[in-house]
Length: 415
Image 1 (spheres, rainbow, N blue to C red):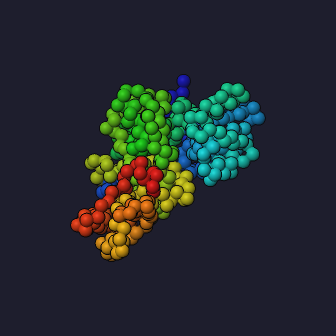
Image 2 (image 1 turned 60 degrees about the horizontal axis):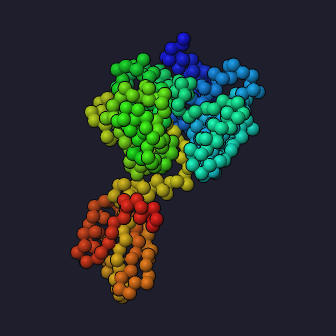
Image 3 (image 1 turned 180 degrees about the vertical axis):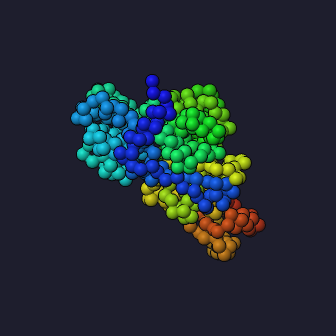
């Protein structure tokens, strides 16, 4: 039976039908920032702007080797990168594809999937939530006798994702000291981990998960995959409630201390940093590995590779990313201020603002009060210390206010 390394190398040769190896680039900005030799494996530069094409292609080529092209029918459920990878591979093989996507999928992702697949695919929009979409796709696949392509819990998919490691070692010419792997369902991280275990055992691994979707950490703490009670969907490429069973077979050898959690708002800071400093467009999941670099100990002087897993970012989300980054950096706050209902009260408040403080939001929440009115105020500034000083002035002036910047419930309703 073909061993894993041989299978990955065969997959890597086959995948050259679609695209050349993605670049492995030394990043001077990050290297200087962390005092290490930081390299980025640019999976955001595949034809579909994510690594997902690798696993989909590898699973599909094995099926295609046993059937006539016209007889192949593939089905998947995805709202993003997996759908685009499957669509691209269907068109390449001339195979039929039916791609189930939630009704809530942004039109931009639907359009991109349709462009990649062309006439080879059909898109079915069903379900408000992904679990509903997945159930519909699996039922359809069973009914039609089609091949269901799992996004990560598949040996062939894991094998395909591991080609990232094969390319990385060849490009670097030596084994790196550390590889930082983003984790969603675990297909990429388990494939790379296994390949490096067999071919570069001296290389250390660490994992990056979104704080609101830490399924690997939960599995390691419980000794088996468990379903998270809730998932923050912002990091949509890695927001998975339960790590895959097959990926966990490889990843179970690690400790929960090997997993670093990236707060969603901090990921926004990293996305903007990479866009502004390097001109790199990374989706939230694609920025995970870079984001946790500041959490790692003892990387000074070491050779570190970060896997940038994807760049499918809708620029309509940029205002949200900027907003969340400002809040995390302490440069923007939202206050509910009790304003006395008297002439000159607003002027008194405005005179407390510093020269770099800017009002970005001003809205009366209650106008019927006789003595006081509640006002929602958003304030932007250049340095976090400016907002600390402003609140000290508010306290001294006797204003009553509530900082709701990090109040999830109130922020959701009012901001």
